[in-house]
Structures are given as C-alpha cells and as structure tokens.
Length: 122
Length: 188
Ligand SMILES: [Zn+2]
Image (cartoon, rainbow over all chains, first blue to last red; front, side, top):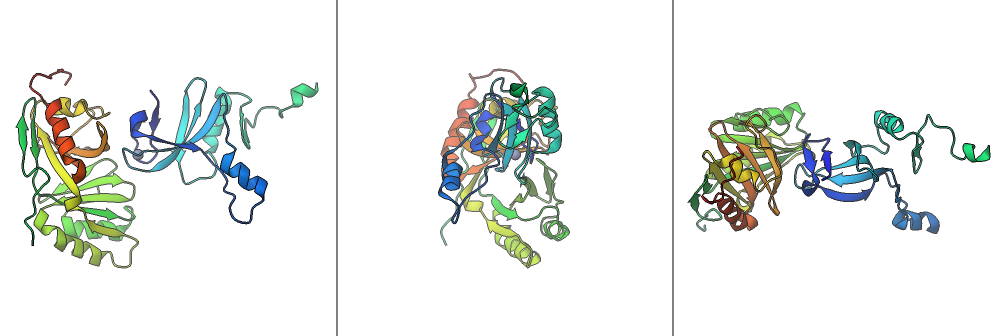
C-alpha cells in the first residue's frame, strides 16, 4: 500500500484517497514550439528503474495537487512537496543523493557524484 | 415555494450506532485566502467562529466552521439562516478574492452517534478512528467506501457526516450496513 503525506492537509493518505497525475515537472511546449519539442512534451515520459518524481492529487481529501519523489524499485517514498514549484526542494534532492548515490532523473542528478560517463572514459 | 426536504427526510437506523439523516442543514462554501485578516473578521462577525486550524472545526451558537482545504471553508448553520449569512459574508468580502455560495441543497448530512460510532465509520473510511487520534473538533475529508465524504466529531461524541446529496441514499445504506447489530468487530 502506497502512503503519501499530503503537504497541504498533513494527512498520511493511502492510495485510495489519491489520484495519480503522471510525471512531475513537465515543461509545456505549446503554440510556436518546434515539432520535436511539442512531440516530446506530448509523448516522451521517463520510465525509470529507481528515483522518480510524480504528481499526485489528494482527490478524496483536500483536493490539492502535490508532488512526490519515490523509488520505483523499492517503493520507498523520499518525500512529498507542494505543487507551487518547478523544482524539487534542495533538502529532498540531498536526501535522495544520500540514499541513492549517483541517481539521475531528467535534468536532476546527484550533485555530489562524478559526472556521468566519467567512469566509462577511464 | 416548494417544500424543501432533506435527502432521506429524517430517516434513522439503530444498530451498533445510531445513524440519522440530520434533516435540512444550511451549508455555505467559502473560498478565499484563509490567512487574510479581512476574511477572518468576516467569518467571525457572521458566524461567531474563528478560522479553524488544518483539519479542525470551530463552533459557536449552533454554527460550525469546517476547514475543507487551504483555501476553502464550509459553514454549517441553520437552513433558514443561509441566505442572510451568504449576503452578510458577500458584503463583508466585497473587493476580496473570495467566493461565497449556498450549497445546502447540493449536500446531505447524517449523524452517527453512540458507542459503536467509531467502528461504524472505520469500516468505510481509510482513517484512524482511535480515540486518541480522532478527537472532538477533528475533521476529515476522505471517502466513504466508493464516494467522497467528510465528517467531524462534535464534543458530544457524535460524528457529523457530509456528502453530496446525489449519493445520500448510498451513504445511508452504507452506514446502516456497517452499523448492523450483527456486524460488530469490536476494535474501538
Ligand atoms: Zn490533502
């Protein structure tokens, strides 16, 4: 059973109170964008084995949308945060880096890890 | 004007707990900035109640103010007083980014009281009803089996349940089934 803490009302809501809202932090490409950007915005989604960022809605509750960071392998929930942000809070990113060294997801990565590909080059 | 009646017109059931259609109840949805002083003042003047904390209710003179979400309150009051209160609140909030609307006839209200009340609700909502967890004055918006519902616990150990009127029969049937005298679990 997935349990997420709603950052608005503080309820530790179990899955049946929640509605999944897909991937978090999508950047919208609308009218005037290139075909490629528009295509990627519509269709391209992350499907990670590990750290993932998602949108959820406390639908049977306060009704608010929020974000959650969790691990798709272990189902560990790293944390939840409000919807009024384009990036996860730094404290949460740091916590994920501690728990999953070297993690990467879209433009977010473990800032303390050596650059991806550095090991391959040696 | 037509004769207004509540969804099940006062139906009641007694089993592990007493389940009752609470009759006509006035309900006002107020949306706005709950942190604003002018909104708090308007609510205080109109209802006698302070703005409730997160997942809490405040009560005064037969009126209950319920925390619904970070920008929404539900004011529960006498059915016949609603129009006057809506007018008073709307006037007091002139110019503020706020919405006041009478939702009395869109909703139904039930009460569940008696020693088995916590158990009756615990069977249908994913909420911890332990006496030290769900305390008087506490409020929760959640689901009641398959439909959205909300409830608060009065100081007199009576749960007040609010749902959409369109699912009133469903909720009453659900609560009476859960309160069946032969369906005791005995957790609380
Ligand atoms: Zn919530």
